[in-house]
Length: 162
Image 1: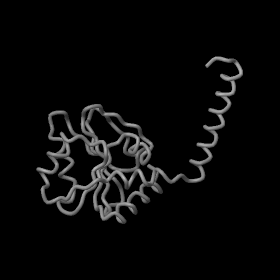
Image 2 (image 1 turned 180 degrees about the vertical axis):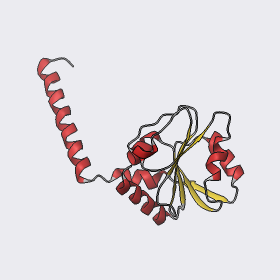
Image 3 (image 1 turned 120 degrees about the vertical axis):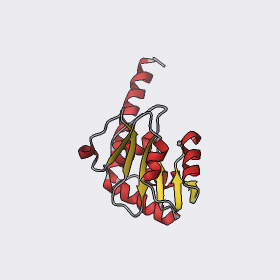
Image 4 (image 1 turned 120 degrees about the horizontal axis):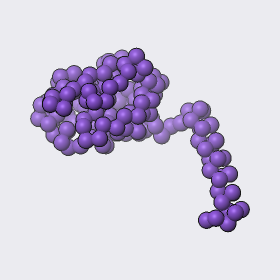
């Protein structure tokens, strides 16, 4: 878990007035946790709460995660469980919750039905805004990748293979 990134997202949530956030975009989950998870059609949600020190990963039992490596808790559900209900049971029941850009309506609508007192808002900007600002290490990696790309293009052009 990249705790610096996590704290920056939490700070962004506070600035936007978003008390809770559901992150389901696998690239955003990877950005925060260092773990690339693809559960296909099954629900997976990284739940963030400004009042909690750590996020909570809600995921199917078919996709086991190492909590020690992650550094935060994981809650599992079976395919026969109400996955949205499992998530809802760990959430605060009021306030504003941000929903990211990839969470399907087949999960969002049941959550809204289970917790009608929650105000749902667009939440992707809390993570995407943090992802857009690069630190020195990320900038160095991007520069190196660009140098490698440039070298590859030079070889292709020199060999006339384009």
